[in-house]
Length: 269
Image: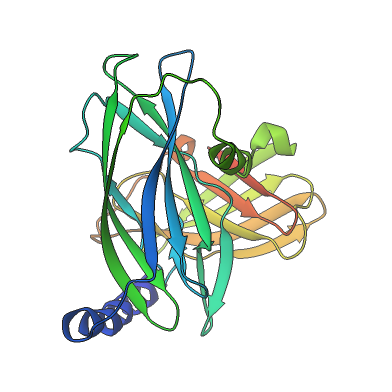
């Protein structure tokens, strides 16, 4: 599976780079920063807005075997101590037998900004490295900036709607238990997650993230036995080194036809 991922990414880059180097190609995505509002605790809510042309998509934080993971750099910002991203529930795409996870259309990624000096303006500079795909995939760099100085506490409807579109927490979704059984494989670690929760609707997709740098998770095989959802996959180190997993950092996302669920951590199974 890991070789499949590397092969898919190599094919993606091989397809995209000649277009960027030799052709006049208009990137089908534009972006802006929505400046949002001030919260009573001194943090600010803002958002990145990406507008994709019809038929194009970009990727979620864990994009799948053939996806291009997004990267964000905030180092050029002023009066900014930390950034938290809220990811709305993504879509599942199937292209040429490959599953990827991402977004289409008008994408809003809410940001929670912690300033060094509460009440002072925040100069937000976002350097984005993303992939955009249709019949071909194109790695794309974007630079967005804005000064956030409005002291209004009134939420921006567009950002508020994106916040509401996040997956439910385990508590909100009625998750009873979440266990992870681990066993070594030739290349890494096999993981079987068992989550006790009501059906989220339709054919459920489960994404397992290791929650530790340098680790990659394969696509999972999913089944359900009554109230128990079972997902099996493999976790590998990108450099091929031996790995140790911290179950408290494992993140399990369930995508169903009715709603999505974000489960943080699991116990021994």
